[in-house]
Structure formats: C-alpha cells, structure tokens
Length: 252
Ligand code: PGA
Image 1 (tube, helix red, strand yellow):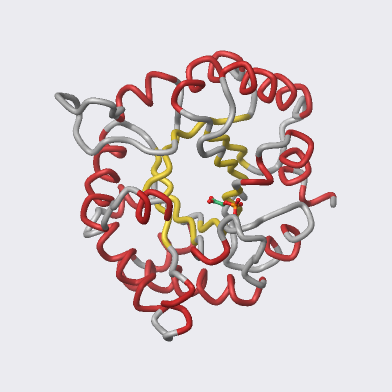
Image 2 (image 1 turned 60 degrees about the vertical axis):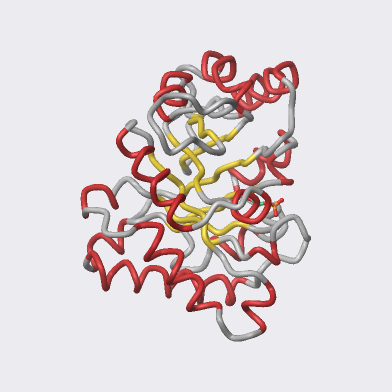
C-alpha cells in the first residue's frame, strides 16, 4: 500500500510572517501524526524559517522549483543543494505554470529531475494536458510524452524516489476539478506506463497525486480511486483550516 500524500503548493503566496503563522498553526493542529505524508511548498524566501519551525513535526517541505545546474552564474536561480540545505525533502518540477509561463520544456524538466535526485531531493514531476489537447483526443499522447521525456530512462532506483502529479491544466485554479473517474482513468494510464517501463512492482509503489481544484469537498471521492495516492493542492492549501481538513480527509 502506498502511503497517501497531501501536498500544498503555495505558489507565489505568503510572506515570511504569514508562513510562520501558517506553519505554527499547522504544527499545533497536527499534534498527532496524520495518516498521510504531509508536504507544504512555501516560496523560497520562507523555506528555511518554516523548516526550523516544523523541525520534529510530521510535516515535510518542498520547494516549488530548482535550477538544473549545480551552481554557477545563473542570477536569480536556486540550486538543489540550497533547497536541501534549507530543509526540503521534496521539490516540485514541471508544474504547468512553469511550463506555460516560463517556457520549461520536457528536456529541461528532465535535467531538473536528475539534478534534484543527485541533490538528495525527491522530485514531484507534474504532468497534464491542456483543455485543447483533451478535446482533440490527445490527452494520452501528451501525458505519455511528458512521462517519457521527463523520466527519460531514469534507473529503477531513481524512479523509486520520484512522485508523479497528474494535474490537468484545465483544472488548475479554475474550480473545475476532474471527476474522480476522469482522474482515475489518467492515473491508471500513468501507472500502466510505469509498469511497462519499470515493472509492476515499481508501478505499484509509485505515488501518483492528483492536482487541480482539489478542496475538502471533492477530496474524499478522488482519494477513493484505486490509482489516486494523494493530492497536490494549490488554492485550498493556503488556509490552515482547509489544509488541515484535506490532511484529515479520511474523517470528512
Ligand atoms: P489549485 O492548484 O488547487 O489551485 O487548482 C493546483 C496546483 O497548481 O498544483
């Protein structure tokens, strides 16, 4: 059984003061260790402070991005080692906002993935089709291309440290969640693709998260699907009460 994962992606939200407030309240609310692995992804500026605050708590940290090089003349960029040292165990890679707004392609995303792995981070590889791609019947093609080029012959050992997040672009920040059946269809496809490349044992163990307008209202039905192992949540992760509800989805 894959341990469920609930991850909050704050995007470009919360100052350090706001992050401290959130993290302290989250820590208090999760006094008893929750069933899922809980991850929050604050902006870079708040990572270190939040990591200190959450030390000894069950909450893990993720960065929202990293640069594909180890170090050097890349003004404004952040390396895997910096992220790791700031207290992160995870890093989100290839979010659709990075792909569309910042022009990140599959090849670059793959390099980021390798850099994350060699820095000792667990990458959360985001994939997902646009509305147009879905309507044109290209969903499967797109998702498989993103998997193939994103993972691009990683070893089985590397794959065991990767999480995949299926985030249909049309569902992100739109309030239009994929139905549980729509999400499950793609999650199964992803798992089958992994099984084809890496074998059924790896496929059974990989965490495949769903993202796109997840809220405390729809999480329960999503998490009931056999191939949905967790959620990557944007908007609904910004409010502590709502995030705590998501983490405790089994009791909703
Ligand atoms: P959303 O964002 O929950 O606000 O739709 C999800 C994401 O972008 O990871």
